[in-house]
Amino acid sequence: MLKPILRLVLCIVICEGAGLIGAIFTTPAINNWYAALKKPSFQPPNWLFGPAWTLLFLLMGIALFLVWRQALPFSQVRVAVYVFAIQLVLNILWSVLFFGAKVPLAGLIDIAVLWVAILLNIIYFWSISAAAGILLLPYILWVSFATVLNAAVVVLNRG
Image 1 (cartoon, rainbow, N blue to C red):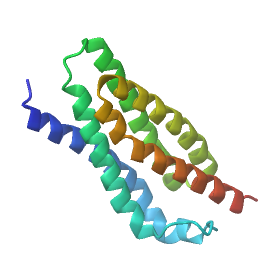
Image 2: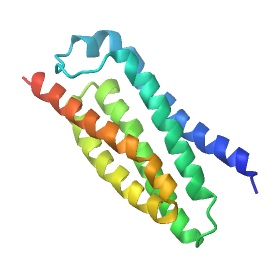
Image 3: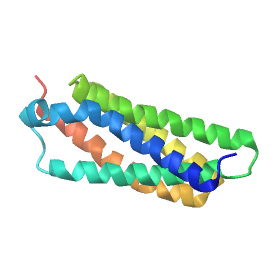
Image 4: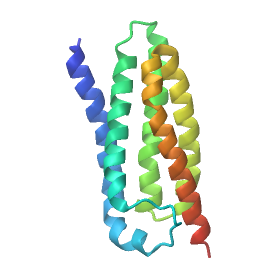
């Protein structure tokens, strides 16, 4: 059995690793393809995204740890972790679709599904650990904003 501190580190590394995978697709497109897109006036500066996502992935890792360490019926924890894994994959997929494939509409569809997956994740985590559910609230708020931003990019760059 892993010691609690090792579990915590593993959970954070998994989540930050997802961010690194997303960055593989995002970073090359920032200064050329993405820079050429029309963006809404509420677009934050590019430098803000890295620190914001790093913090969000850290909170996600801590939330995952809080759920994983619970001694509840294993099936309840397993379902919550599966939901977490699904939203994490959808999170990576957004970077692949939006920045890697350069298809903002596909990114918009993915991020809408991601938002629902995050909401389900919050519900499942909250039922096991209120603190874990609370730690995911900044994540759904940021993804809500990112959804609006993604939609604005689609509208401004159609045709």
